[in-house]
Length: 282
Ligand SMILES: NC(=O)c1ccc[n+]([C@@H]2O[C@H](COP(=O)([O-])OP(=O)(O)OC[C@H]3O[C@@H](n4cnc5c(N)ncnc54)[C@H](O)[C@@H]3O)[C@@H](O)[C@H]2O)c1
Image 1 (tube, rainbow, N blue to C red):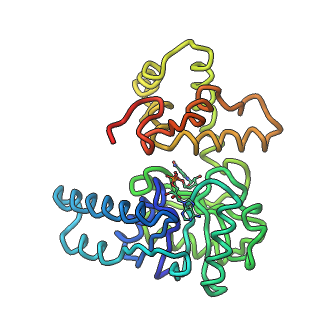
Image 2: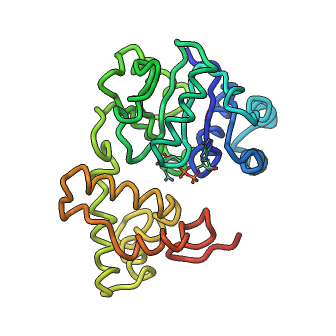
């Protein structure tokens, strides 16, 4: 059973995951290497809860409970939890360094999951002291709204861990789908042509971002590819495409886009940096 959740990374995904867990009654510890950012995320989450209360979607008791449940910690060593959800920068070396520090501070029974979009669960598990406690738990953006969570099963992930993760997902109101560790898991692989075809059109100069988004939105998609990747983070989306490209022997259908690569190099990562395909008020 999971009673206390640690969330590492207070960026786009970590903040959303922490919000969901605390709101659903779990004691939640939020950690970021940039403690100021974690406190900012906490303030934003509290503001969201106030808005939900004002709209009648949460009661004042629910908000008070959620506020009580969520706490920022300044050190990895304070992330003592039954489950750690890692949602930090998409770099295997940095993730593995965090796992090492977390494993030292937690018992062998505690579970560890990564929210990675593009890295192999087996590769991430390679340096763990206890790889049998590890899996992928892939939330979607924005985590408080998106129902789906992919449970990504590595070679060493036992059935009991999958069962505990299924329970956990149910407890926090998510729909869990189990998939074996493979490039892009389910959604990021199947949805890839939506991005690569759209960005190929940008690369060829046949359409502009606003027209592309308007076309897809009015054809029935919830968001167009440019606005959606601005929400996701251009760096994250680009890394997923690059991962699939390399995993499938540089298959043409997964070729990363020049326009998107340029945005990433220029630090135009989307909403989180204030500019991507579009500019955003800070
Ligand atoms: N953005 C998405 O739509 C999305 C969706 C699903 C999964 N993911 C995955 O979630 C993870 C996080 O993505 P994001 O979009 O939230 O990134 P982000 O850039 O918004 O946030 C990452 C956070 O990690 C922190 N961080 C970096 N190194 C750290 C360390 N050593 N210890 C603690 N914190 C550290 C950063 O300060 C930052 O706040 C990635 O693995 C990504 O692939 C992202």
